[in-house]
Amino acid sequence: MAHGPMPIALSVAALRAGSALILASPIASTIWARYSALHADPTTAAQSWLSSRRTARAVRLIVIVLWWMAWDLQNADFFASPTQLLLFSLPPILSVGIAQSIAYFTSRRVLRLKWRPSDIVRLTFWSTASPTAALLGAAIGAEAIYRGWWQGSFVLALSGVVAFAGSVRLRSAEGLQFRPLRFGKLHGRAFLLSRKMSVQIEKVYIVPAGKGHLTNAYGLGRGIALTDNYGEFTNKSQLDFVIGHELIHVKQHHGRKRLGIVLALFLLLTLISFNLPPSLWRFRPLVDLLFLLAPSLTSYFVSRRFEYEADRGSVEFTADPAAAIQALANLHRMTDTPIDCGRIVELFQTHPALLHRVSAIASVCRVPSDRVEELLERSR
Ligand SMILES: [Zn+2]
Image 1 (cartoon, rainbow, N blue to C red):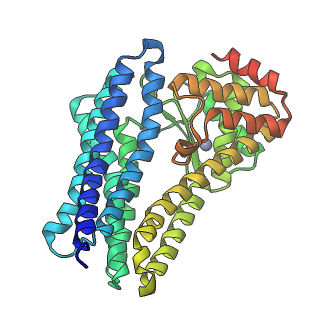
Image 2: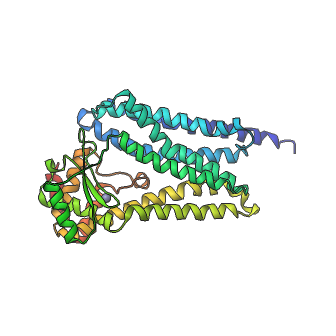
């Protein structure tokens, strides 16, 4: 009885210190990555910086989860007053916002991008809205649902809209514009392949790649898009692989399936939370963890599976694994993306690391490993 309050006071202090550390970590890790990139050898600076950006995605997600868990562990009620609600939502948004603006200024310098300060404001705003603000919204919605307030489901839905709209606006802030093609080599090739693979597409788009860091291809609902610099580094058979990959995304409705899976999972978690028996309330921080991490990690996992599926479908059609491997290696070289990444960091990525994609293609098509090495070496 006599020594009861002391450990509680200590643990509250520890939790407060922990919360402060959680809040500081996006900014601290971004400043550290900036320092490392600016002091790295110029030939590896872009790679080092972009690899730290991958880790930062994971950090941003984990920060929100830990922040919410820390509030629950302190039994702090963010519905107690509007001030409490602000104290819950504002600090992580500010922390991530500051970290993101530092990151965009660093990207501009390291990758030599022509972003104006107003572009950086837009990039920071939308990259903080999605996913950070959306995740905090999901936490608030879930908290309401735990208490049996059905209005929480509206907050959840609104968070979903913010997450989706934010990612679309972020793409356009990054300079991604889709311009429909009416004729030309790429247009002809894409429609020819789509007929051969029996995929229905209505449009082929071209995207200005800027300085090369946007170099990519996209499978959309009823069309595909490629950045305008694709021809510069791919030959005809490599281009066929890239078009084929995007056509498989379209054919298999990968975008829609991924959205459906994530929505279904959120719905399931909402139902579980709504009916959480009071005896399980002390495990609330674990439920929080599940609520935010499970849909995000599932979405990334499904996306990576779809990438493997699109690679496999395309290479089965083109029957040219060497071109496929070189196309992927060239893409990574153009965008300075690291060819490998840690298993944990990969869990938070929409695309598998290059080496994993290449070895999947090699194993489907039985390409010997020394040949794979040779192909990767050639595109360096
Ligand atoms: Zn893909």
